[in-house]
Image (cartoon, rainbow, N blue to C red; front, side, top):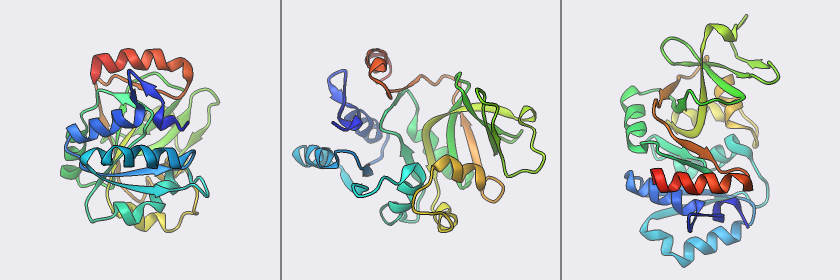
Amino acid sequence: MPKALVNVAGKPLLLHVIEKLSKNGFNDIVINVHHFSEQIVQYLKANNNFGLSIAVSDETDKLLDTGGGIKKAGSLLNNGEPFLIHNVDIISNADLRSLYETHCNRGSDATLLVSQRKTSRYLLFNETNRLQGWKNETTGEVKSPIENFRADDYKKYAFSGIHVMSPSVFKQMENYPEKFPIMDFYISESNRLEFNAEIASNLEMIDVGKLNSLEEAENMVKRVL
């Protein structure tokens, strides 16, 4: 079974995300599939796409990672307007409509929803909340295109797995291989493109990445969805 169809509080993770998107005014959806992709396609077909416009970007032949997946889906996403990316295994109380409108009003290349949640890997932002680098607290590894970069000079926030991108990113992605992580793109291009933080002070979220997180996820669904 693909993770997207794992049940949490009586509904597949995918349906929780679809319903949240729909409630926040997002009616044109692109779903990226790879593992057990036919199950997801059949699930959507059996439910008539839940009355929404849903397209599928199929990576059955080759998993392209988080960045490569966005690049491949470019023909479905690039209609001249910003688009929101939402990991299927994230359950949260995030206000997706507000995030999208903030991005559109700001006019940057991407807006990343972040918080002060404790994690092992942080994104690093300057005083204007523009992305400058990344740090792994466990290993001490730091990444930034800035010469003589000092992580301690910047504000650190945890990424939520929810972000809004403008079509301007696709031109820069032309220089990237077929497969790459989106975070590598963000860090490498942070001195050329403008990637901003949207800081959620009251964000509640869980990454349903492991079986032992299901009970906690069910409790969160009851609180925030």
